[in-house]
Image 1 (cartoon, rainbow, N blue to C red):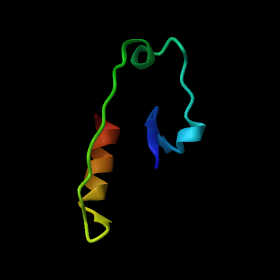
Image 2 (cartoon, rainbow, N blue to C red; image 1 turned 90 degrees about the vertical axis):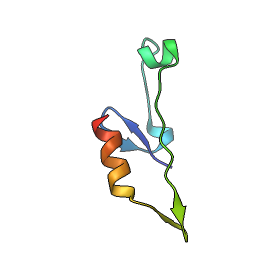
Image 3 (spheres, helix red, strand yellow; image 1 turned 60 degrees about the vertical axis):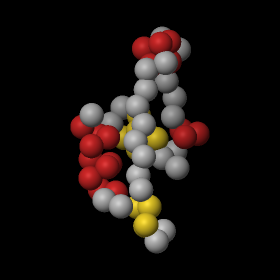
Length: 54
């Protein structure tokens, strides 16, 4: 699993945020589901690009 942090995908154990981060304080967040067919993510590049530009 990778998480998007400050515009970069990092391993969850490497993700660090400030205790004063708005998302942490107010529970702001975003997630996206990626359908998988025959073990392959469908349009993965488009999903990752959309997450980077959101």
